[in-house]
Image (cartoon, rainbow, N blue to C red; front, side):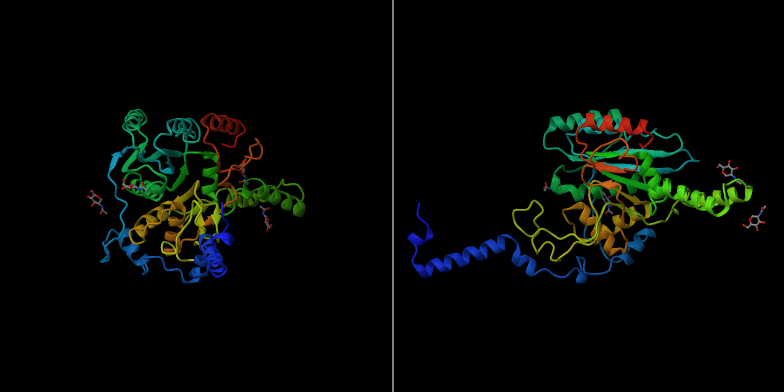
Amino acid sequence: MHSLSTILPRGRRKQCVLLLGLFVLYYLGVFAMLFQTSIINFNYPLHEPVDAYVKYWLDNKYPIREPINIYNYSFIHSPSGKCAVDADSKLRLVYLVKSAAPHFHRREAIRKSWGFEKRFSDVEVRTIFILGVPDDSTTQQKINEESSKTGDIVQADFRDNYFNNTVKTMTAISWALKYCSLSKFYFFSDDDMYVSTKNAIRFTRNPLNYPRYLEEEIASIIAKKEKMRGPLTAANDSRSLNRSLKQIVDIDLPDDAELYAGYVFASSRPHRHQSSKWYLPLAEYPYDFFPPYVTAGSYILSNVVLQKFYYASFYVKNFRFDDIYLGILAKKMNIVPLHSEEFFFYKKPYDVFGYRYVVASHGYSDPAELLTVWEQQKSAGNA
Ligand SMILES: *[C@@H]1O[C@H](CO)[C@@H](O)[C@H](O)[C@H]1NC(C)=O
Ligand SMILES: *[C@@H]1O[C@H](CO)[C@@H](O)[C@H](O)[C@H]1NC(C)=O
Ligand SMILES: *[C@@H]1O[C@H](CO)[C@@H](O)[C@H](O)[C@H]1NC(C)=O
Ligand SMILES: *[C@@H]1O[C@H](CO)[C@@H](O)[C@H](O)[C@H]1NC(C)=O
């Protein structure tokens, strides 16, 4: 082995060290960081406002501007009658589960746990799994059988692959708009999550106050009133207490409320060092920060946000990380993400009591573990 000092003259040695240093800085992304554009000047293509175009689509009219981008892969499986409900009831929540083609056991565990549609007799819930096309025909054959048995598989004609994640998410949105457009909320999830349907529904009733309003606020109101007027006995007191409880417990969002909620990353930065799995070249994304976005795993959209994201995507260049893409769409449409501590993008360490308010937690790729935890939470009244 020869070191640089033995094979090169002194001058060349300096040059080499300099070049090497520059290369290391380049590799670590230092130059990329220097040349980033401030997020204040955020202007992701198309470089024009999109909300006016979106309004046209929402009104069933066609804007002059042609879409640059339509997530319009044809469906191989599409259970189009899945979301039908009786005339007198309404869909409350639709689970759109982004699942990898070969994850048969995970899907089965979800159907038996949080995806079980008959969990509450008075709340209409549906569960759909979104898949792309696997590379091998044996897996496809098994998916065909699964689909005809369960009727809950939406499969579209794109390669089932990590870097087609945004395509998968947008396929979920476009399928929901075509065949399942009347639900009040859409709950997006990966197939390795624990979810509490009970808490998800509670969350949608009063997302700004979840979960405080459930216990602490009720207790504090009662305490305050008792302190003011002695123990609650008079009809007058109980009427007014009922009113304030109702405000807290029973607020339901109006049908056109904008909800884009989950665990929000308010100011995260793109990775610029080239060894990162999430490395982003400046040419693909030039800004120093991402817009605020709800991180992947689980998140909830209200009906109007689902529609706005879909039509906005016609005019916003694809971005390969799906959660950040939705953040970009939200920024373009002035939709503010709502942060909740009860959506865990990592695995919240399990204990029965600690999970009482959890809406979703990552880290349940083992179907047996998911079933155990969910059964326990259901018995404890939390799922
Ligand atoms: C999507 O594709 C279908 C058939 O491929 C076509 O009929 C439909 O018009 C397309 N939708 C849009 C919005 O372009
Ligand atoms: C995504 O799917 C499309 C359509 O099948 C395919 O052409 C493309 O190669 C896929 N992308 C990746 C990264 O696999
Ligand atoms: C209820 O309380 C209010 C004031 O707190 C009082 O003016 C009113 O007379 C009370 N009504 C009854 C039926 O006691
Ligand atoms: C308050 O609510 C309880 C239970 O919901 C009910 O039994 C009670 O009659 C209500 N009181 C008044 C004064 O409305």
